[in-house]
Length: 303
Ligand code: PSU
Ligand code: MN
Image (cartoon, rainbow, N blue to C red; front, side):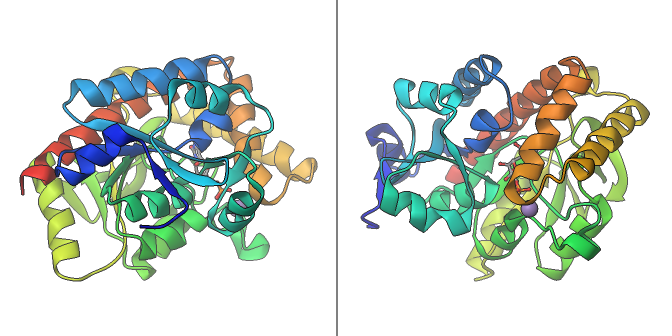
């Protein structure tokens, strides 16, 4: 057992018994949503997973440990403490050695979930190839992690803060299956369609679980993307959202925002520019993904 890993007893018991567990990231809490909506979200998303018969495991790096499953006070800290950093793969050693508190991105959540033995993780949106990456080389570490780490990630696709076409090209090169949950269209987070297609349209949660098992039983390492479109009633107008996103991207460029600060900057600006409307959609799609991931986890545990 990795000496840095600290798994909540309830979560460890579920893993040992082969019961369904769903991992959750914490960057969405610390850097993706404002307080207090993030705390309300963080509690409710765990409750949804429980209602579906699975055990939630929110992941973070705290007190020099890779934490799998947070106590209520730890969850509150992730939502309120402004000193919480954003921890991608490369930041892990520094945070472990210094004991600094950090929120995990999709990449880091995947790698810690794999260490703990949790095969599935639910989030809102994943990182990808940024617009203009042909000159900035800004490609999220999430994509490398999906290439190498064997965890299925349920998301609502990617926001058009990214170049969706290039993100899908990169995933193809890296051998990452991109599957749609009852859809042929790859979703664009706030909108049900991006104009791009998925590799395979999953008919059921059970089919998703069988694809996961087939990949890993065949010895193919690496992640799987399960793209679950936002429910129709919460979807936003794509022309309106693209206009907002263009403005946020322009402002980031004008202000010289770079590196790991770009994604949190864009997420916060989008919430402000939509007067909070996008936040409500973001929260609902993430609940929907948690429900989907739980149902797949239940099926996977039966295989
Ligand atoms: N995209 C979203 N919401 C998010 C993120 C991305 O729509 O909260 C977060 C995730 O934690 C993701 C991270 O792993 O941002 C990617 O950051 P970067 O682009 O710096 O790799
Ligand atoms: Mn980046």
